[in-house]
Image (tube, rainbow, N blue to C red; front, side, top):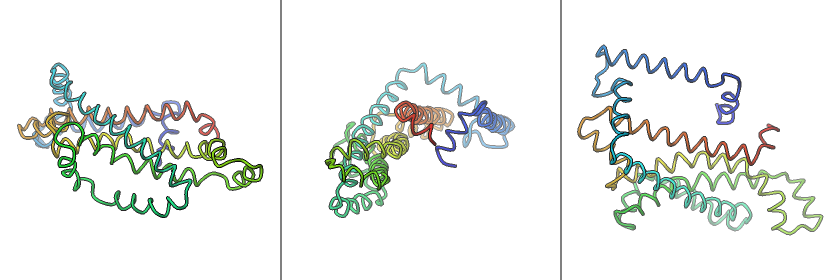
Length: 262
């Protein structure tokens, strides 16, 4: 099921009822299995234990400091990677020469396992926030680039011909036709890039961070505080979903015409 199908399903009356009921059933089953020792609590803690750990962490200053660091890394990485992806995608989508010369390089870079190159960011940028920010930027760069390229090439060919016959400049054609036509696809890429920026920030913290939620997960795992680790993962899930929902809201506000038509 595509993201559009999911969005349509959840906008129906009581559209959230079935997913929430399914989640409640899964949590109830996990709670029973954990309480009856069917599953090892060190492997999968009871949901109530995770909630208790989350409440405890919420009262600790160090948790909020680490959350803020991860949020800054993800937001900064998304801003950098998304902006560069949009700019590069626009150049590649409008220029045949750039498409032939740059697009294969972008695909080759994306095909490289990014976790393998994460340690290189520590060598290039040191051990501060910079390597994690730039690593987060690399994770969300390619989805935005591809979305922009696909969106620009999806513009109606007859409309292009009409504007060309009317003497429209390339800038006018871009502003009046290509950019509006590419926005629905571009927002799809942005929705994909938002959680990827968070993933990039966490991976960067795993590799060489001293602050952040990824560092907390590593620390709690080493101390066998599994419930606390799950609590941090839950926070990350909420952050990722919140970013996705925010982009979805902006998409619907700016492109209401597209969603009404579809």
